[in-house]
Structure formats: C-alpha cells, structure tokens
Image 1: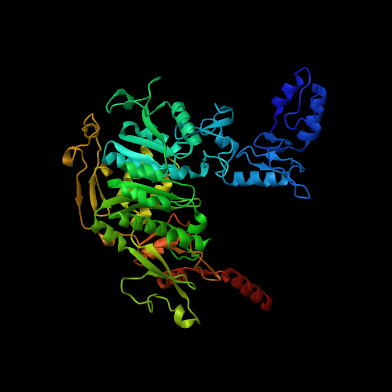
Image 2: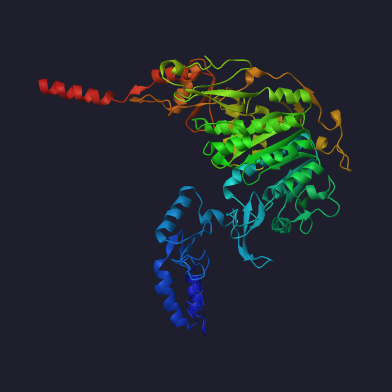
Length: 615
C-alpha cells in the first residue's frame, strides 16, 4: 500500500532504488525517474481507494505460490494482490477488494475507527523483528501482530468483534468484586492479555489477576503488554491494599500487578482455587468445564464463552451431539436454544463435582454465546440443578414448544393440534436443555451500575434489554446507583455487597478475608420465588404473521398482549422476537385481531372507480 508521501520519498532520493512492491528478480534497481514511471504505470494505475487510502497492487510473495498446470509449486508464480487497509487480508482481484471493503463499511469497521484515540495508535518493530500495531480498548493498550485476525496462523489471536463480550465479562467481575475483596480471578486463555489487563487496570487492588496461555509467543506478548500499560508482572511483592497505587496512576510506579504463567488451562485450574474463572477458548469450552468446577470457590462465578456457532446454531447437528450431547434442529428460537444447551452442559459438569449452579446471565449474539453462572457447593444444590435439565417437545410445523415434565408421556403434550390434523409425525424431542431462568435481575442491575461507572456506553442498551427480559416487562424504570447495590436477591440467595470504602478496607493487609458480618460476605439461603421466573423462549412476530395482513408495530403489539393479561417483553436474541407466557394459539389470536388486511385500500379504490363509471 503506497501513498503520496512514498512517492515524494522516491522523487527526492538519488541513486538506484528498487521497487518496494515488486521482487528483485521482477524489477531491478534503477534511478528515481524510472522507478517513479514504473510505480505510476504499474501500481498506481490500478489502485483501490478507501477512506482516503489508496491500496496499490502488490507483486511481492505475500500470498501462497500458485501451482503450475503440472501441480509443481516450485515452478509456479506469485499472484498479484491487494492488502486490505482494515484487516490486512490479501485479495487478488480489485472487484473482490472493493466488495470486501463494502462489507467492512456495512459492519462499521473502518480504518478511522481503528486509528486515533479509540483503537490503533501506531506501528513499530517488535523485539522479534515483526511489525505490530498497538490497539487501545477501554483505556488498555495491547500489541497486535499483523496476522492477529487469523487464529490458524497466529498465536496472539485478537477479535475486535468480541468487544461486547469483553465488556460483559468485565461488568460481571466488577459485581463480584463488590461482594468480596480481593477476588482471585483467572483469564485462562490470555492470547494478547487484553481481558486480564482491563481487569487489573480498572479494578486495581480489588482483584488479583492471573493470565495463562500455553503458547510461549502469547506469554511474551502479554508481558510486553503489561509493560505497555504500566502493570507489573508478578515476580515479587504485590502492592498492598490501601496504598497509593489504588488512588491513581503515578509515573514510574506500577498501578497494578498481574501474574502471567505459561501453563495449560486445565492444569492451573486443578492446582489453584479461584473466585472468578473466564473460559474463552477458540471454539467449544466443554473440555475445560470439569477442571473449572473442580477448584472454584463457593459462591464464585464462572463465565463461559463459546464461539463454535456452527454447532450451537444447528448448522452441524452431528458436532452438536458429539460436544454437547444434545439433539437440536434449526428453529425460530435457535439462539436461546443454543444458550440453554450451553447452560445444560455447564450444569452437568458442575453436578459431576457435587456443585450446583444459578444462571446469572446468558447472551447469544452473532459471534458468540456467553454464559455466566454462580457456583453453589453441595449435593443438594447439584440435585436441584440437575432437575432443571429436561427434554423439549418441538412442533416442526407451527414451532410450538413446551418442556416435558418428569414422568409425562409424549402424547398430548403440545398444546397445538398439528399432530392430529396433519399426516405423519410433526413433533420432535430436543435436548436435554436447561429449563430454568437464564437471567437474574439483581445481578443485571448491578452490572448496569458497573457499566455506567466505567463509562461502557456500548453495552448499556444491551444490559437494559436483558433487565426487561429477565422481568418480562416493558417498563422503562431502572435503578442503578448506591441504593441498588446494598442488598440484592439472586436466585434465592441474599448477598450483601461492599458498597462503601470503609467496608472494602476492612480486610486485613495480609490478604485474608474476614468472615460473616465483618467483610460483608454473609450469605443467607432463601426459597426461590418461581413465580418471578421469565417464561421460556419467545415467538418471532414475522415468523407467525398472517398472509395478506399488515401486522401492527412491535411496540403496539406488546401493548396489546399486555392488555390481554399476558406477561410480555422484547428479547435480545431476536430483534423481532416477543417473550411472553401466552401460548402460540393465544399469540396468533391477538396478532390476528389487530392486523389489517393489505387489500383494503385497493378494494376501496376499485369501488370508487366503478361508481364513477356507472354515474
């Protein structure tokens, strides 16, 4: 990629110079006027322009050698190509590059958003000789190698699209830091270390961060990123709580301490106990769940990010059965189906360790499924969680669904009559899936407070939608502040939080926690109020629209369902979805009642024309 400054450099340089975009055997070194003519005629003439940048064609061996007709790579030739200014991918044809850049624009990914104060700052050579770029997210700088977007070719993989995931995980850890101090937290798959560094930089001495990765390249990169953010790599004494390090960043003094270890995730989770564990491998996380529940502390939190959307969203059902032990089909509520499937796998892993779970958060978006659970020790809690794993009856014709109760027969389970009016079998059994709630209102409200406190404007609308969804209401009254943090009920557990500086400083300097009322971690078990659980699944208003009828606006339709006496809310799983406790038959009856025929205006016009003709 060349710009005008590069041509000025060639124009003012004396002596022989080689072309920066051609190999030596293709274009030999020459004087500046010939080099300038070569660049203008060959490279500059076929450039692709994007956001003020001109991407010239490159003839260097950046891509794989194209084999000859005989299949010999040695006698093949290198293909001319373009380098994308946004993601550094190489594309051979100019038209394909233009289409590729348009997809970046549609997704809001432009060079301007990656440069300046928000993301990419500058590029310079790394100690290993490779050029890297520095990206800034949430006030944390990390180094990225040029191939950081391709996990098959880079150990330090970094995905810019997972920013929402990182912020949700950060807010869940911030909520736990209000309950106990300090929090032993683990980022089991560090890569660039961006997530663990954000924890340490913003939560300071409220957390003790451990970042692990099995790759030596990643470990070196994480240590370099620690120096870049003025964070000390653990090797000596930690900064004591209550010191000046917690008050602000002082030049030359590390603001936090992070432990970096080159170790397999399963090994470190077996060796050491943690309060908070985050699992974000490339693909499925089922291979690490047993080790995570083996040594997690009571009332600790485990967050699991699964990016194998092909198997989760029913595109590869054989892989789904192999990894999660569930049978699923493609449905209108496939994202919530994926979230309940991941929670069911987590619950089974916890039950094998005599532990139960309470789901605090379950989010399924385009690129990932995030599940955050609280761990409850004891076989009784494990049995209660195992009882919530049930089969799901799904009608493939009308997409009605209902969870099977214990001891129920398959016949006459679905409220629809498709199996009687249509030939053949219309119902299938899916699962086993998690049949309990997917959200906790108290925890989500505290997450919203943490998002407001740390200026995370991107996820605040999403967290608010989750709160409405957990309450199954359309009310717009949210409370976030000190009054909402003192005493929260989470799935039958009352948790008193550390909401003042005096309480947070009550822990002794040796790092040991106080117990009972002195540290604010007093926990009291209560009976769970099942009536407040949100209804499972949702209906898509477009999927069940009536042919030849104009549907009402979604907000109006929510109001009509509320007036009919049903609980109703929107859902983050589907922008056109409606979560309600109404059955599909009741849902369709309300939709039909308030839909208007599309041919009303046309018939009225024809009637008026016929009247005029008769007159």
